[in-house]
Amino acid sequence: MWHIVSIIFGAIVGSFLNVCIYRIPRGESIVLPGSHCPHCQRSIPFYDNIPLVSYPFLRAKCRYCQGAISLQYPLVEGVTALISFLLFSRFGISWSYLLYFSFIASLIVITVIDLHHQIIPDVISLPGVGIGLLASFILPHLTFLNSLMGVLLGGGSLFLVATLYQWLFKREGLGGGDVKLLAMIGAFLGWKAVILTILLSSLIGSITGMIIMVAKGKDFKYAIPFGPFLSLGAVISFFYGEKIITWYLYLNR
Ligand SMILES: [Zn+2]
Image 1 (tube, protein in one colour):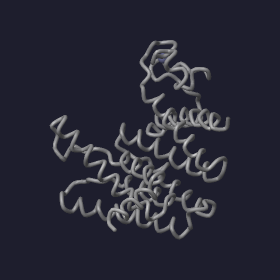
Image 2: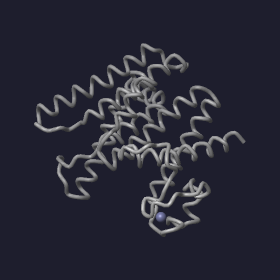
Image 3: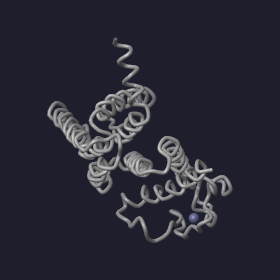
Image 4: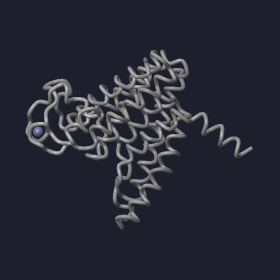
């Protein structure tokens, strides 16, 4: 029963994340006014506001102007609902559920905004660092020291890589946004997860980069935003980090 509630709650939060994704880069308020259609500007009634449910019924179109509604809306909701379910299955109703859910929800918003605009808004990552540090006093598996080392290692290592890259290639490879994002990831997950996140995101990022280069014939200068890979790496580290490390140590016995 509660599992179903966690899925529904996740979908509702996901609907709000869609609002954040659309409005934060445009500098609009995320609270007011209520949701409106991006084509005809008419406000969306509450019964259409959970695309996961209304999307198939309205056949991916606005009820009024028939303007196309992006698949991104139900996708963001579906992923958020899934994350809520997974976290609830692990933690039940607890601070851990609430804090990790807020953390991964911010990663979802950052991922989609970075894909669209190639920016990672400071208004998410910077408060995220502070909240992660404070959360270490509540979360059972995270000490304050571990969280602080996560921030320093996350922010510090990427800053070093970014500076080195700029010095070598005379152009920006990693943005300052990526540095702040990894600091936030370190604050919530600790320093070990930062190392794993860097390894995983570089691996997934370079494979994806090569596929894009082969498919589109573009060279290395074609910048792909790194935020989505950092976010994905962090989520994998969070759910499977222990297993990956155990497996790795087993291989290297
Ligand atoms: Zn419309």
